[in-house]
Length: 165
Image 1 (cartoon, rainbow, N blue to C red):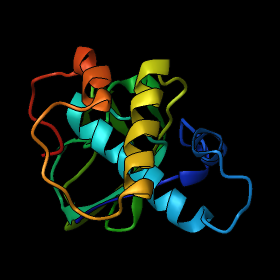
Image 2 (cartoon, one colour):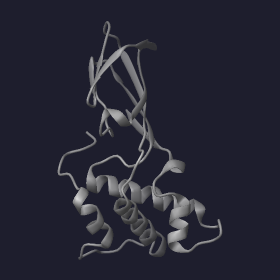
Image 3 (tube, rainbow, N blue to C red):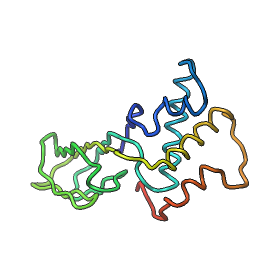
Image 4 (cartoon, rainbow, N blue to C red):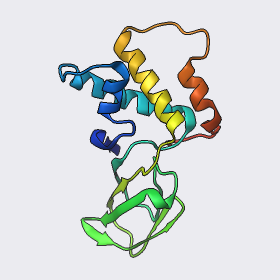
């Protein structure tokens, strides 16, 4: 089992950025705006194959001595990595996004870690705001035939690789 919990209060852009973009001054729409903002961040992540949201990740699996961490771009964004095998803390070695677990084999394994995002480029933030604003102004599904402004802003960052195995 893999789980990723996004820290919605540390997203870039912020809820206040989205409210400013939409010229909303009250708090009556905050709950839905956070959903739209989170969705737009995840959309942008899928387009450019890069982690954009601070997250807490958890993997629960049968024991293996080698695990590739999902959602991770590079080791600099990783903090608080903890590996438990049968409930006991284990030492580990990290190479890129690959974790090698030291010690004897076990039955069950749990890995938890935090991913931090320090900087999101202005044009990516603008694309996220445009996508979230589209969700807000037109919450219905629609057919799309031409590239949107948000897709054009994200295009230079697109990486053609498989992600989130």
